[in-house]
Length: 68
Image (cartoon, rainbow, N blue to C red; front, top):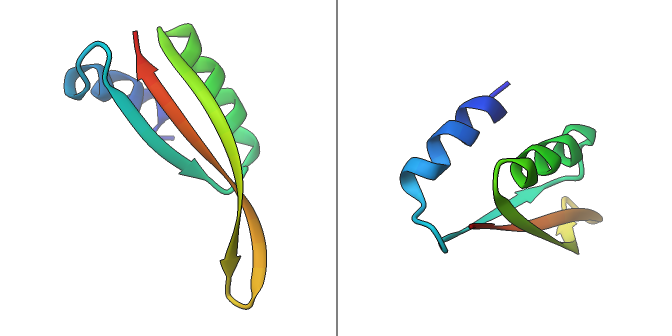
């Protein structure tokens, strides 16, 4: 629900050439959000990571979004 608001807010807070670091537990909507970010002028890279979480391992995604 907040994706649209974030897409409006970040260009106000992040200068051209600036970067955001985001993480997500690989929810299905995160892929759609990354697509929207790229369509609005952000370059996005993805780095998968495995982290310890409550006595088990979980995979998360670290996204770096660079404002063009």
